[in-house]
Image (cartoon, rainbow, N blue to C red; front, side, top):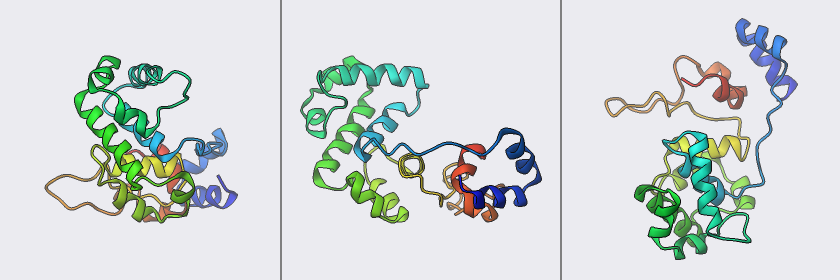
Length: 188
């Protein structure tokens, strides 16, 4: 995290200032090694599961493709659903993962190089057309893969009865400069 972000957060909130002084600055870095395809498949596999269960299932899925670090979109599309079910994926997750694979081959899921040059709002609008991929999933990809600092707080404050706000009222827009960190420590 930059010195400017640390200064901004420390000046904006006395509690955060004390926390940052006690713990030190955030040393987290985005994981840019995974492709957007791999990041989306892993995100969908983890939805509604604890991390250990999801990692076990994903490990079984990857074991279906010996000699590969991660299956390709073609691999996943060619794999019978019964094999993926036997690895532990639900029918809904299989449908979502196969849609991610198909959309990757169609070019809707961009390459790592292409996504780095795209605007966040375009990425969100494009990827949320894929089955099983909502705003939360895409925003996590933007944050953890690309390290994008300008994130919206829509995922926790939305309900069918009210329109989606652009920021969480509890966090407010005054944290705009360091939203990436705030998403990690302000999950409401």
